[in-house]
Length: 230
Image 1 (tube, rainbow, N blue to C red):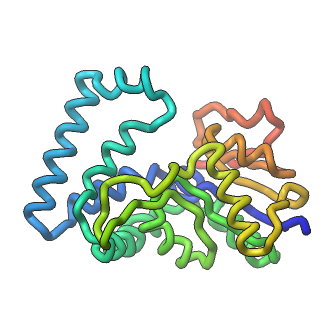
Image 2: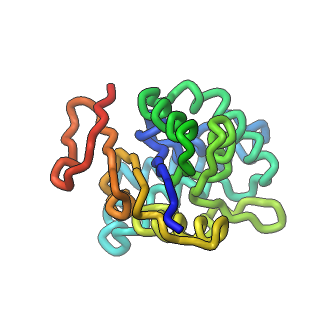
């Protein structure tokens, strides 16, 4: 059975900025444990230093697809409890994300819900906070998961980053788990700002790019529709 789906990227598609690193920054700025705060600030200094002197750029030459900077940033969360990070995730949505919507795209997503589509938010952001954003919209979320051992964050991802081809894999797995059916191409639309989502968008009957005014519309060569945003 073919699915009637609407797929939405999150960062710079529904929300106006990249949310994953910003979540780590939010935790670092609000954490109430002085020892953890010091450790996070020290690691942030190391990250900025590594960027400034070219260590990160050099590392990418050997591991170009590993998103090194994102992974190093995430390591700041090592040693923090899952319960606390969930609390911070809810606060992050309440304090920041809900006020950073790209409203024309959010409105479209909500219209798809009303029109009877199965709507999914699919993101390389972290599920620790995106689950609350999805709850706000009443939309399920597929996102990068954090690794926890004994209720404490290891500072690593649990499995692969939900990025590029991995999004397609996770969408299929989700549909198979929910409905025992991984076919969705026949009646599906997807929205994204990023060419990294091309694998997901090419699987859909319709695809729509979300492009900030003044930037190049990379989706034009593929015949995608476009929403221009401020």
